[in-house]
Each structure stands twice: as structure tokens, then as C-alpha cells.
Amino acid sequence: MEYRQLGGSGLKISTITIGTMTFGGSAMVGQTDTAGAARQIDMCLDAGVNILDTANAYGGGRSEEIIGELLAKEGRRQKLIVATKVRFRMGQGVNDLGLSRQHIIAQCEASLKRLKTDVIDLYQVHQWDGLTPLEETIDTLSRLVDQGKVRYIGCSNYSAWHLMKALAVADRRLGQRFVSQQIHYTLHAREAEYELAPISVDQRLGILCWSPIAGGLLSGKYRRDDKSPKGTRHTLGWKEPPVYDEEKLYDIVDEIVAVAEARGVSAAQVSLAWLISRPWVTSVIIGGRTDAHFEDNLKSAALKLSAEEIDRLERVSRPPLIYPYWHQNWTAADRLGPADLALHAPHIRDKKS
Image (cartoon, rainbow, N blue to C red; front, side, top):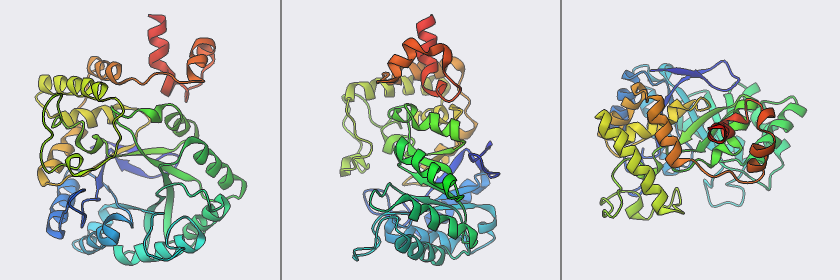
């Protein structure tokens, strides 16, 4: 297992993170019970995984409760960095959601209780809240760090300007900076390369990728002209991620499957290994309805794709340059900085060839 530094912090985490949305979840996302969660956590620990990701909203708090029960036994807590999140609705009251001081403090205390721990290692705001002033959110998160209830803070699902404004507020108020962002980033959905990946390089933010095989779309189970397998998220109405161009999706899947078959590995492993090969990615969050899914996904940590394989996958999945990036590529390619190359390098290479 490889360990990478989490942004500008001193923390090192494994390139695989245990995802727990199925713990105590619903039929749509998966319903892993306590015994199954214990097996999956131990499987990951045996493979060298050292970080677990959850959220207060998963299963209405049940995921955190299951994790708390399991981490209290046999020293598991000392072996794992525990990450959780706050933002979504957790009650029927008008203030039972968002990133206000009221909601963050109440939910931090609730998460600590459910997790049976005295500190959250990485506390992430789960989504943007445009009604609460960023000063209030950052000050509250910083106070939780000062109190020893939280060690590091991160964000999730922010746009680029949200993220840069939050970092600027933290700097101006001498508060805690986000050390990471958790985003959706896959071979199918590479929009993060426009701004979120360059920002992470420039501002030293770790990137954790949620749903790294696109809810199963990149697992090889979904093929062109084939009927969708029964019992999967997408057959049950799951809409993350949205598919805007089905033909391009299947072009990507065809290439993933071709690489996988030549290697004698699963398509899911290839999809995950491509993400791990991205220099700006810190860790990918794996989950699964079954132990077999976890076991297969864990093997991606040891799969090293060749430059030729990475190039094949990059070409079939590359997003077009949108403005102002196409203009920068034409007129400023000789003056791009290291962060911009996260987006521009393949296009510059092709222009020169």
C-alpha cells in the first residue's frame, strides 16, 4: 500500500480509503450490516488501508453508529484515521441543516457520540452553504480544532470559487485551512481537471475521490447494448453521476475493459488504478455491496498501469477545453505554471506533435 501526504498537512493516508455509505444504508446504496462492516474494515486494515470515510447523513447516522461500535473493539480506532462530514439535513427543524455555527457544533457533538471517540481526525463540510457566511463556518471549524474535537478540516463538492474564497477567509482570519477536498472524479467525469485539480496543486490540498467507479458504471458490468444488471444502484433509480453522452461513456468502458482483459484484472481495478496514477489524487474511496467488491477494489492499489495504457485511457476520456482554457492553450502555453499543467499538458503535447 502506498501512502501519500494529505495536502499541506503532515498526515499521510493510504491511496485507498474505506467508504462506508452502505453501512446501515438503504436498498439503493447497499445495506451492509454490522457483521459485514466488520469484515470489510478488517479486510482493508489487512491490506494496509489507514483511513475510513463516513458522514453523519449516511443512514441517518447509522453508518457512524456502526463504525463507533466496531472501532471501540480490538484497537481498530488506533489503526484508522476517521473522516466524517456535516452539512445535510439531520432533523426536521429549520436549523437542522447547513453550515451555521448552530448546526456544525450540534452535529460535531452528535458524530463524536455515535463514533464513540473524543476526536474526529478529518471533519469535512459535505456541500456548499450559500446562506451561511464563510466567516461563521471557518471560525466554527477552527474553534473545534482549537478545542481538540477535530484535527483537520476539509470540504466536499465545492466549486472552484467557493474553495478559493474559503481559503482566503481562513487566511484573513488566521483560521484553519482546508487540507483536502472530496470530489467526484473518474474517467467518465473529468470536469475537476478544469479548476479543482489545479487549485489543489497550487494550494496544496489533498484530493479524495468519491464514487471512483461512477456508481458501478466503470466496473465493466454496464456494456453497450447490454441490459443493465439487476439490483444495481442505477437500475434502482440512482442518478449520480448523470450521463450526458451515453456513447462516450461506452467508448470509455470499452477501452477500460480492453486494458483489463489484456492484464487479466477487473475493469474496476483499471478504473481505480488510473485515478491513483493521477499525481494530484491522494486517495480513492472504495465501497461495495459485498465483500467481493471490497476485495477486488483493494487490488487496484498494487496495479501499476503502463504509460501506454494510461495514454489510451486518457485519450478516450479527455474532456474538451472550455473557455478560457482553449484560449490559454493557444496563446499562453509557454507561460503556464505547474498547477495549470494538470489541465493543459495533454493538449499542449498533442498540439506539438
